[in-house]
Length: 109
Image 1 (tube, rainbow, N blue to C red):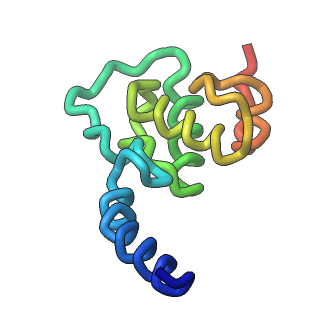
Image 2 (image 1 turned 180 degrees about the vertical axis):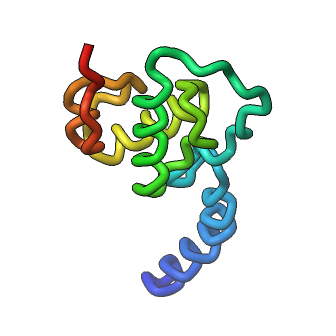
């Protein structure tokens, strides 16, 4: 078997695998696969701050769900994806480095 035949065979065999790899699990935004929260939580003391984080994540292309001030599963997943995209340790938490990268200031105590 010649070199060109091997290359064509390799491409032909790997093509079907590539088409399956584009699902939500392997996409750049897997948080989009998490359903938006159905229940509306009551506003907490940091709701405005979390809403600003959610708005910024959405502006940057990360699906944090509805801007509702709730730091729920979808917002945490979007935050972790943002952190990964910026090579920040992806803990899904609002640490100082993450907030600086987002351009969101911490609330004054």
